[in-house]
Length: 169
Image (cartoon, rainbow, N blue to C red; front, side, top):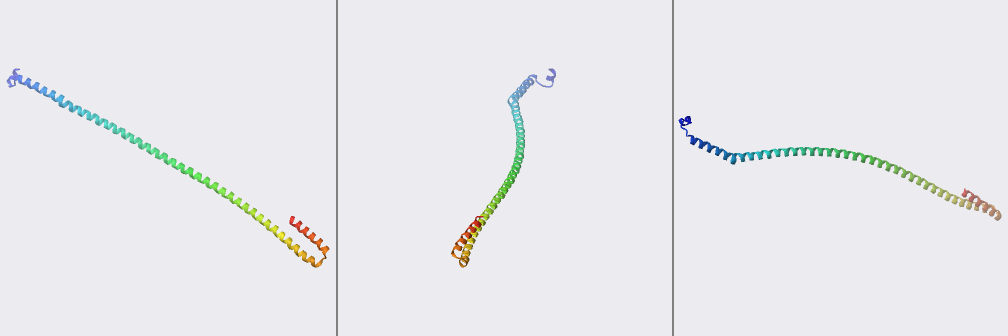
């Protein structure tokens, strides 16, 4: 202590200053430094939490992007398959329609041939009838000139029978 007194330091004042400085440090620590550290710690935790959330959001965004790409690829595959299926169905329908058209045209041809055949038969029958009438008329005229009444009736009957026989066959 002598040394302290020789230097001109009053030890009572020095102790008081040490106590005052310690009190000041304690007050600053509890009222200023500790709250500042708490605020800084809270801010650090908040920033760390925000970074974790940002990473989680980035991961979710990447997952969503990958999911969207998968769905787009899947949709493209489905669209391609739908187009292929539609083309196959169109080809089948086209072939079915073509076959139906051919069958219908064959049926129309058949009906037309039948109509022509019927009409031809009708025309032939009508021609036979007219020819028969004409032959009868002609025969009558010829016979009237050449034969007598008895022979004429017999010849008329034979002619009618002959024409009927030809028309029937």
